[in-house]
Image (cartoon, rainbow, N blue to C red):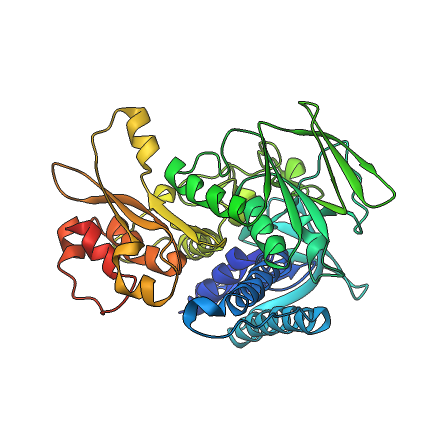
Length: 455
């Protein structure tokens, strides 16, 4: 296939490389501009390192609780040098794999900074000192986001940290205040607690993970409290000071958290400044680029995908958006087309226990007055959970009482991020609870709780 189309992609994260490979396979002439790391800064400098550290922390926790498995306890200690090397090795391997795949597909990669100089032209200042003017029939903006920092904070990379300052780890904090109780915040609480830090979490509302199922949040809060985490509920940080031993975080209700370190995990801001979007008439909203169901901006041949689109900030969503852009560039899908339904995207939180959900939430259904059927099965009823010496959590399936169609679900417990795939498939394919209940799954396995919940 030869479309004679020219696509310029600004940003080499999950959205960018999915779009590049998919478009290249369709005969499109693809050039990618990446100013940082191919594979995506948010993905390879945030997500992958944090999950690597969480996995190491989980291994430490397991090793230190061997008596519950009929073994003698052994205290594990972290080797910071080895962990740093492990993080770097994984990051570099993933980045090199993406680069090699792109090159094998004929994608041209330019390391540098790009800006739009016209509706169909992109100027690039390459890191090697050269400049390029790229002509494009279509342009995809997928430049990602970076950690948001409040105005009263000046991160120093030593004691006052952004999330990106935490890995590879220079040292492990003796104590730390985590500001922000969303997904990133609770993962950081789990991570630092696993490595032995005394953690204080500022929770601006009355539960961690605001907007999530209260039952899910309650399980996580209970685990945090059992691990000695201090929860400052209803507290917002309004100031921070360096002290002789670390930092002092001042809250709006008068409470103060004094720890050796503090990390701000209060969301992200889009990397769209300096791209020349305003000059060519691309509309932005708070720095994000609003898109339609085809991932098009207000200018139809200029697309946005990934975090800058303002949709769900998930790598899976970004990759799917990238593939949809590639389809659109060559004239749309050749077969039946299904638009992205962001409400059906599965997500996971890599705490201990893990948390995962997809589709309609119970609280959301009740708030809207929608009739639903909710079935819940605790993992404590499954043989595999007892064998694993970890019976925390549950499976919850939400369905339509009239049709039996699966509308959503939540899982809290070991391997929740993997198990949610079954419910996600059911939600996406409009399967019924009986379809899950009729599946002949492995015994013993945690997945048996899914069929039990579907009965």
